[in-house]
Length: 410
Ligand code: LLP
Image (cartoon, rainbow, N blue to C red; front, side):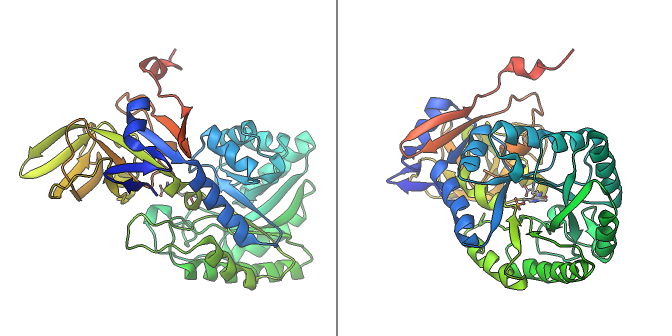
């Protein structure tokens, strides 16, 4: 996490105010060492058990960050042809790429097969048929796991629960065995394992354990039918501490709960996204104006909901820190953007010390689903991204220009 030294806020050994001056704002800023530590924590938790940590690149698909993780030995969890493309460009070994998603198109399936990815996480009978047909056409056998919806209901925002009955994800629990028996009949399909992802920003381990126990029951029945499931993929979902009073389990706590549920010989896959990149990235913004209106205090920043949509979309909380601490009395303030919508806020009713016009704020823990979910809404060019490594900084994405807004128009 960013740290104060004296009155200045730092990431690693670099002052955030210096980053703001050098690269302008708003800018996403990432800590390399935090990314490495977060990933290594998963690797350590896996220990000597055979398995793969596939970074969920939907959280953050910057090529430099992907390359860093690929170099550390990560696999990739992808959800579109575009993500597979990015991961291949970032030097991920195709045999470490898994591919989930309820709506894989024929083009995407063919691209994934030709790219020789590790496996598809298949989410419906219809998708199984489509993959089998395309695999036959191009004569490349498809390796698959079924994504099983275990019907558990973790405590998180309703938009990001995926393992609950009635959601669009995976094969319903009751139909899992039928799916495996159907796949066994397909000539162009090779069954490798089983997958389940129950949701995101989950802080209670119980839901993961419950899902694992249900998945284990399916594994037993499927294997009794002569189908070997070599890999068990638990998906991602481990939450992070956005607020001081939250307590997130460590990868080690999570994994040591799940291991005992399965036999020693099973190979494991995890698809963490948020727990690797969220607290390694932050959004650095400038205060354009201070404003009092209707008895409320507002800090209007140069970042809007198009740059970080999580607060308005999920009512997500991101701690906001001044980049320079002062001894002034803290005042209750809304931190908002320039966009013409009341949902355009980064934080409401935050106790913040005086920040002058032109001063900077850091919206913390925004490395996951931050830049990745940003848009050009209000014709606002996409932001710059900077990676901090010790006392050095590196631009890893240029700030887009006005011309870029028109790039694909005809
Ligand atoms: N695997 C699958 C199949 C997924 O669908 C996801 C995330 C992950 C892995 C990674 O989950 P994580 O470790 O990051 O929790 N935009 C929302 C979160 C959407 C999660 C979608 N699936 C947010 O900003 O909270």
